[in-house]
Image 1 (tube, rainbow, N blue to C red):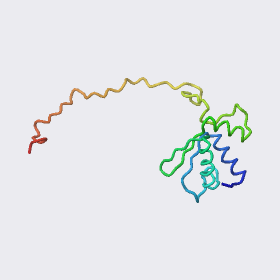
Image 2 (image 1 turned 45 degrees about the vertical axis):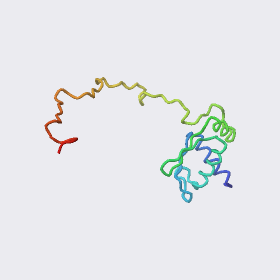
Image 3 (image 1 turned 90 degrees about the vertical axis):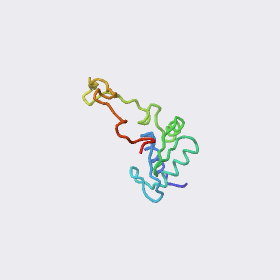
Image 4 (image 1 turned 135 degrees about the vertical axis):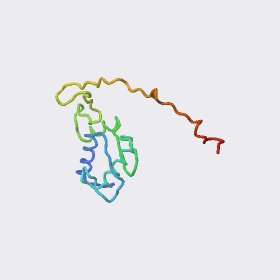
Length: 134
């Protein structure tokens, strides 16, 4: 599909920055994050999917696209990015760290016990109802 080069570059830049892209299946509307026609986003992602640069999931009227390793290499060449730049989904986050740089301590509560207590004593024989009883 023909589209302005500026729009194509904007969509591909956003895809590379985040590593993922989401779009509602609405061909007439505009993409809320990129402010470009949604049709451009969907058709460009279809083109990348056919070349196996992205994987696609579709759920509840929304498309979800994820970059593959080949897609990262292709976008690096297309957008002229250095090798050390990675999408956000491929960056290692520092889990367990808070803003102050201190590690969170796990709560010291005992493990949950899912067994019934001593006072649990069901009795089904006294009701007189059940299989074969009237």
